[in-house]
Image 1 (spheres, rainbow, N blue to C red):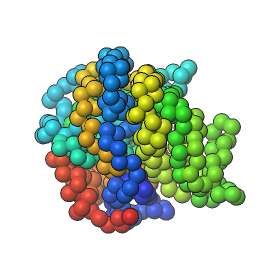
Image 2: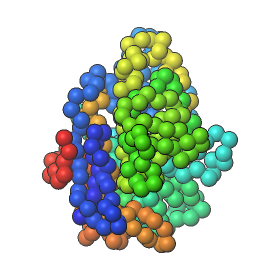
Image 3: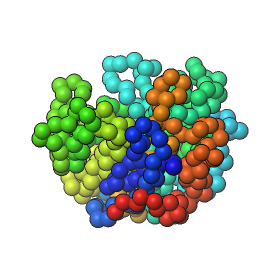
Length: 379
């Protein structure tokens, strides 16, 4: 059976041992949590949604200045209109990309380490984040500006071969969903955002893979100084948060655990903005906006201020996370991958859940899709 993911509190979709099919899983938004309106979307992307929730001329001026000064690195108009899906309604589809680029490294070697399709309903009352596994084995459509295209490979190869525009082409071909805007953040930018909030608190998941289980329970990083993260709620700096959400080999769920931790970090950033008083202290808010504006890149048409206004009536616990429906892990083309479908260009026979999810996103009926796919729902 096809698998799909869950929200902040539950697990992301988990490939069963051996890569065979497994139970489908989805969960609705976590109960409780922050209820302050004005926070929604990605804490690493929708910087202006936090700005707009504040008050005062200085904050508003800073938000407008930030909007004008954003690094507008991506031009979606460069993709021929005839190659793109039709926009069917006024729902917002924002693509949040986390690249593995670090300052001082060759940007051409970067890949999309994290990709989340953020869908905000047309009425503005709900938002959904759908993680796309970087190892998802998909069709990468033809792009005359890419070094490689018109082939089937891992999803994150699209970013390496053709940057954001080929990534957009690949997602739009995969889903039929029109991408409205792009927000990209790299490793250094993520550290800046967390440090601008002083820290975040995350519930560390202990390692459970053979050879990585620790006593006391927790997880030891395989990177750098091999930090140890004790299990349970832990306060993290930007570098520590980045380190934790990059771990995957220590978990039986592998990359699915990593995606879940990335989703949890977005929630933690949102929660930290509330607890740190960023929304109620004008100086803190202005400083946060100034710090985070340098951390992201956006498309040429993205208006941070108007987007923030449209999202001001939403609560952070309205955000539901899922993972792209898939058939588990396996081997294709001589490499380990997450299998999207028996035939990536015709997924309907083997992965009808994915097809129906993308239809629901296109038609702005995601809430209905979740209600119709309750198997394994976690409270």
